[in-house]
Image 1: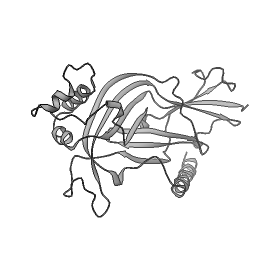
Image 2: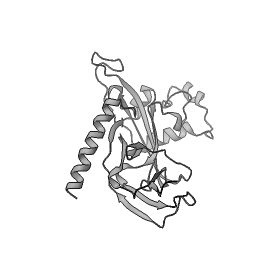
Image 3: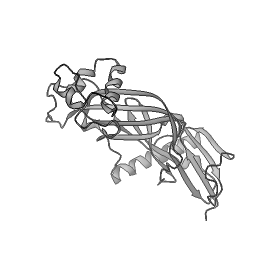
Image 4: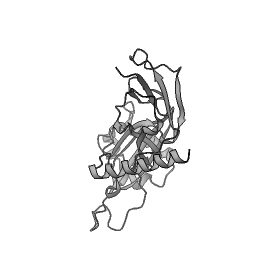
Length: 252
């Protein structure tokens, strides 16, 4: 058994966010309207208790377009599905019993609002409302634009946590993470300690919704970064991370 066990948390602010393909008609109808109109359209389309059947709306030529057929809010996520703390809130680290007897002890705080440089920051959901002249067709440079909807539930509470077991006291310089950049802020992706990716634990995920946000536009899939980096890319990221740590230690 390791001598030390630590629990790592993000801030209490974050939420769930999805980015998925919708119809171009839906994007063009709502892109210049107020966000509240878009939120109402999304929640109405997702409301199983809505007395108006979707098929009836499709038959009405004057009805606003729906996001897509068989739409479900949290399953419109073919590009992204995030559920975590915002990345700008820092990290909180607690020492907990090494035997795992009380993983959610808050008495021994090691770090609060610890600012950590990300290992990798990816363009997960950055898009605009303009469609280029070539439309939805792929151009010769590989640019392909897809009509998308991003929907975000901003929440407060407890999100995922990560546990570290080690024979040495916690070293803040060994902590880093990946972040996902979106039109609605940056979210924590993966978390690493001592170059090892940590498993996210959602057993005590408990949040309260604060607000909904929604946005439509056109995503250039060429510039959409996934969370999969090549071995060569990871090597470069870790080298940059090591250089940054060395600079921070020298200037602390």
